[in-house]
Amino acid sequence: MGKTTFVGSVSETEPITVETTTDVGRISLHQDVVLYLFGTSDPSQAGFAGTLGAVVLVDPRRVEDAFATINYFENSSEVPFIVAINKFDGELHHELDELREALALGPGVPLTTCDARDSESAVYTLQKLVAHTMNVGGSDHGSPPEVPG
Amino acid sequence: MDNILMRSNRIRLYALTGGRTRPRHHLLVETLISVPHYDPQLSASLLPESQALYELARKTISMAELSAHLTIPLAVVRVLISDLAARDVVFIHPTGFVYQYDQIILERILDGLKKLPV
Ligand SMILES: Nc1nc2c(ncn2[C@@H]2O[C@H](COP(=O)(O)OP(=O)(O)O)[C@@H](O)[C@H]2O)c(=O)[nH]1
Ligand SMILES: [Mg+2]
Image (cartoon, rainbow over all chains, first blue to last red; front, side, top):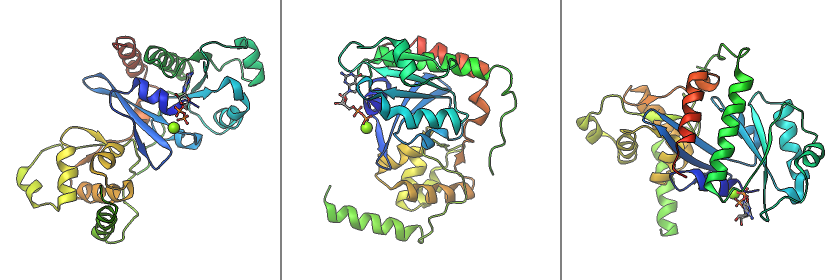
């Protein structure tokens, strides 16, 4: 929950909805670097080539809705991911530790909170994701896989 | 827009691609397209839909954006862009495998995110 809102609060363009489920936004970071954002409820969509990472947005009132997505990223994907609890009513009713346990998150998966409506919070969440990708990508991912012809 | 107009537009576009829906290139919603050497004469010779794509791609743009700006279905954009690429008039940017774990790029991304005016 909050995917369209999240993409909308950081994108410099109105999010574009393609193929009914995916919101596409973009942020120009430098003259030669544009970051594209894809909001989708189908995690297999997030595994495409060149994905820098994924933010799994969790509605704290319905954590179980995120189980399948987290399972997917843990087991079926190489894409680095972090989990962000969307603060739906402004505050959290559970400690992050409790939520980590409820989500059965591995210790290597960063868990954070965010308010998808707030661009500062959303950008901060993206920073955490990029920092995480830098951490996990450090040494053993040196040679990129071949680009399919 | 008027529904009937949209429908006929759509049918026409599918006709334009000759019913071919499997593009030869790997074109994803996020794939970036650009025009390496803009040629106004070439542009003038293109069919309207391809011309519109060619003009938009003068500034690097994603497949998703092309589809949205021109309200052409993504499947059709794929075929038209494939054809332009086969003629070497547009460039399909390789999707960012190479950048994924490139620490320098990641640092620049992080740095850019920190400097965003939010
Ligand atoms: N309070 C609060 N509401 C949110 C937040 N994120 C999304 N919403 C609301 O939740 C609803 C669904 O959000 P949306 O972004 O469309 O979810 P999507 O289905 O994942 O794209 C909308 O009414 C949003 O305004 C949040 O962080 N806090
Ligand atoms: Mg949505």
